[in-house]
Length: 285
Image (cartoon, rainbow, N blue to C red; front, side, top):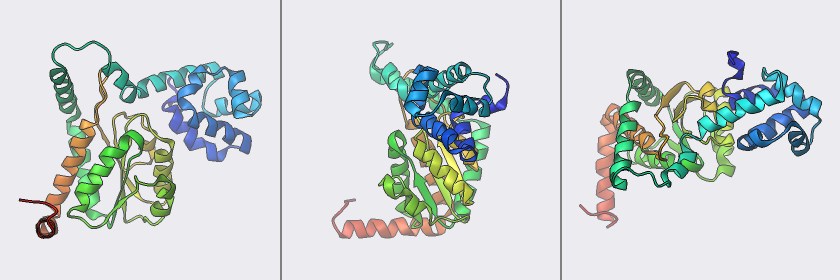
């Protein structure tokens, strides 16, 4: 399957759907919303579930560059299996396959992932990301479902010394209310580890169309949001266990380097915050 239109199918569906007629767009919406299950649907099943005719589905299949629905279904299966490499391997973690003590196994796997993640390419993109953040008027942060924890953690660290942080990860019903205030002078830090949420991808597309720069942190290069991102920081994923530590390490590194670049204000802000927290008996020395 050498045709580039057949790679990263979920992203392609999102890309083309707005250009299609209403019924074909309906098929695209159903494919995206039930992506992990499509591999189990026959053509008849999909026709019934999406409430469209077989001919409509076939027009979408052709638009995606496939000769048959079976070919599309097989390709989706391969992509879904690849996407499961992170999240669905939590199940793998629970299998009785430990080599030594569980702590030794987990630490060893995480250490390997961190070492594999650090490449010259990543370091170059990392430096570009920091420069982009420094030049931005505001930095917004988004992570949903399994990516929410690292995104919220990153936002908390940043707002300790940098006031222009907008956290989009809370109250997903209001994401567009807040995102719509961003301009081309702002940057979104998007954490999107597999499995990717549809809303994360749609928000990335929305902000990309508004000229907002996007720094994507993901564990697979096939992440659909990559096509809307200015910079992609790709961490390695494990086939043996579920972990978000590579993403956490990368985000902490961004905070530290950004803080160094803003040291004329970041250090004084932290000193002042520490003083206030001690005076209010919130923290102790």
